[in-house]
Image (cartoon, rainbow, N blue to C red; front, top):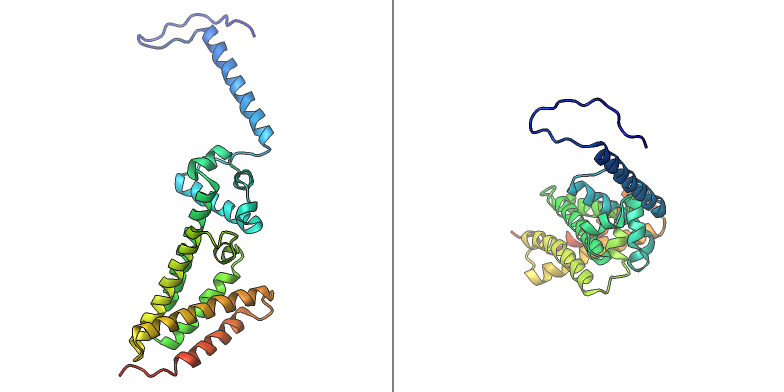
Length: 244
């Protein structure tokens, strides 16, 4: 590099002056930093994504994690692959989720909350109990059929026997079944314990039949399949006497 031969310039009082030597040092330091970052990026084989607000970054990481966990399961998934799928560095991933387990649990919580809201919304979409049963069955089938395959994370996890996972699933099942039982108890003369059993039965019917339907490659149209189960459920539940 060549020394600067620029003519001196008189600057206002208080202006910080950077000498040519200091400027050269700054440029050199910057170049080394850029070279180091480029080398690190080249070694990682990935390109970092632009800076995002924390909530957006978290959502991006969860989406990437879902893809990897669904494909590989919890034990087969690696944080390196999740970071690569999200186009971020591992340090960025660990800033949001300290461990793979923390990431998995956050993802499970997110999808269980979404499924709970979906089921309760279907249940509360009408005051006609026949239409309620129909709406609930259809909503469950749509969740199972969704392209993101979140149902595999929720119902087919290789951590299904983990106490933290099973307790979360039980919380969802109880919330959903209790909501169904409440409607049944209000509409019939059945005591609460019997209504709760029926609620569990209807919730289980929706889940098991929808998963079986998907395993058969969905050869039956979604509307046809969910309607069959709705009619089966309704013909049973509608036989109970209504509260006068």
